Structure formats: structure tokens, C-alpha cells
Length: 424
Ligand code: ATP
Ligand code: MG
Image (cartoon, rainbow, N blue to C red):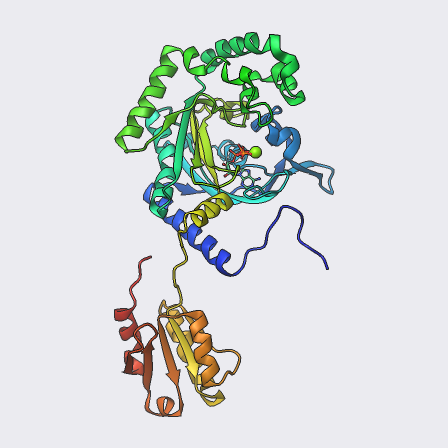
């Protein structure tokens, strides 16, 4: 038997309903903020990720799915969404849009060759936003507020927002120097990866999952003490807006994020739920003012975040939050095959009038059909026998209250319009 590739998963039944529901909520949420949906290819030129995500990041140095296509081009399955959205922003000259900022959102699969475990897959789904063209701290705060508000809307309680600032280029340079001086005498204590990071990008050492408990990590200089006046002011303003929106947060100097392109604000939201497990970072992001230029566009400030859908589902489950709604409005039951054609015609009319309708396709007898109705749990049943077909007066049953109604076929749509309300 052929099995699914390691680190992937199939979606069906309850899981499928949950995911479809989350996707619906995410679209509706983005409408509220007036963000624009964008979609970019699932694979891109390998070079895009090397330049966009950075050579020293874990993602590029050990997690990408690379392949040569049949035309001998180096291609990579996208490990994250930002590089592609930035490429698209530049390639489509979105920087020339009259209505800046360009506020994008995306949703789709990402691919990373990682060790699979709970909350960590090789194919996983991310929802994210990228906002281009404004350096205003208000936008940083809005981008932080989107996932936080989303989790609140879902009823998730155990979340913790960590923020930090990496400062602008000037602040980062002086911080980098301080880090080099701090780690140089202790290089032998660090893992092999960190020894490389020391040479290429010492900030990444702080993000190491192997060395994070060493004393030299906690005693390392803090970026906060190296921010210049401008960066400090930007960070304070971000916090001012977060307070305005009643978003609780912690300034955590160890948040440096796994990607190379961040400047100023960085943040992560973690699940703060007992026994949740170690893959507890639900989303992360920050400002990346240098990336558009680094990928060949005009210097453009930008800020964004990405959230993993699988970890969100885990968090909802851990808090016993059931997000499945009952979407089936009507189940149509023909009493025998003689009523099948009439019933299916009715089914079609109801669907075209906006109702969610299912019908028996298995020629079940009436008893088996009531059992099927119990499994499907529709709001209403329509039971169609010979008498109903002849008289065009239909028997409708409320599946909750078990109340029965006799409704003329011509009044059916009006009846359901009144009793079934649409929230979306
Ligand atoms: P981690 O430190 O957990 O590896 P990361 O820094 O690599 O996370 P990002 O690149 O910032 O993660 O991706 C944003 C979000 O995407 C994460 O917070 C997480 O929810 C999700 N995510 C990242 N990698 C995976 C994966 N392999 N499987 C499932 N979800 C993932
Ligand atoms: Mg990772």
C-alpha cells in the first residue's frame, strides 16, 4: 500500500469542517481590515529564498525542498510566504500603486524538510499578511493585533504576546559588535551551528534551539540597550498603540525570529496552555524594511506575520473549543424510489435558493434514512411520499424540536427563508 509522505497529513471529516470554517473566518476577518488577497506560486526560483529568507536561517540552510526542473532550473517549494509576496510586489510594480499602503494577505501550503512531530509538518498551511509602504508604528501594532484579535474571536484564552525590537541598521550594527565581544571568549561552548552563526550572523545564536539554556545566553547583551533614539521611539509608539487596543504583551529580549530580514519590531504569539507541548509558537512576524530593496525593488518599509493553521487547531482542541458549526440546512428523504426524481428536483431548487441541502443517494428505506439524518444532523427534514407528490403539500420536520409542518410546495422557499437565518 502506498502511504502519504512523511510529515504530511490527510484532511477529512471533522478536521475538514474545522479547516473550512477557519478559512471562512480568515477571509471575513481580512475583509474587516480591508486587506487584499494575493496568491503567489507554490514554487519559486531557489535564489529568491536564498536572498529573501537568508543563507544563515535554518529554513534555507537545512529545510528547503529543492529540485531541478526539466529545463534544469533550480526551483524550491516555498518554505514561507513573505519572499514570494515581496517578489510579486516588486514584479507587478505595486510600489507605484496610488493607494499605499498595499495591504496583502495570503493563505496556502508551505514546505520544510523538518523532523515531523506534533505541530511540525513537512507540508503545513500558513495564513499571513504583508503590509508595504508605511513605516508608521501604527501598522506594526495593527499587524500584531490581527492574529491576537483572531484568537480572541475564536475564544482562545491561553495566549501570550511577546514583542521585541531589533532596531534599525545602525542599532543592529552596534549590537552585533557587542554580541561578538560577548560570545568570542566562549566559542567552544557553542554548538557547531552557532559557531557558524557567530561568523555570519551572531544574532541568530540567540534563536538557537540547542544552546538556549546556556548561561552565556541569558547573560548576553540585550538589543533594547543598543537601540538608537529613532528605533526606541518607534518601539514605544508600537507599545502605545497596543495598549490602546487592550492587547497585553511582554517585552522579551530573546525574540529575534528565525529569518534574516527583520528590522525594528519583531513578535511572536505563543500558546500558554498546560501540556500544550514544545511547538507552542502560534505565529510570528515583524517589520522588514530592508527586504524589498534587497530583492531588487525600491526601498520600501514593510511589516507582516505568518501563523500556522495546524498549531492553531491544536490550541483550540487543547482548550476544548469546538468550532464546527452545523451547516446542513435540509435533508430530503424520498419514501421510495417513486419519489426520487421529484425529491431531487426539489433539492436542486432549494440549493439554487441558497440552502445547504443533502438527499439520500443510497435508496435507503425510511428507517435507515432517519438514522442517516441523525448522523448528518440537518436543521430540517423534508419527507416525500406519494401523497406529497400528488398534493404538492410537503411534510417538513424540525430536526431539533421534532415539530411538523405542512407547507405548499410554492411556499417552501419563503418558509425556509424565514426559519433559517444566515449569519454569513
Ligand atoms: P519554529 O521556531 O517553531 O520552527 P519558525 O520560526 O520556523 O517556527 P515561522 O517561519 O516564523 O516559524 O512560521 C510562522 C508560523 O508557522 C509558526 O509560528 C508556526 O505556527 C508555523 N510553522 C512553522 N513551521 C512549521 C511546521 N514545520 N509545521 C507546522 N507549522 C509550522
Ligand atoms: Mg522553524
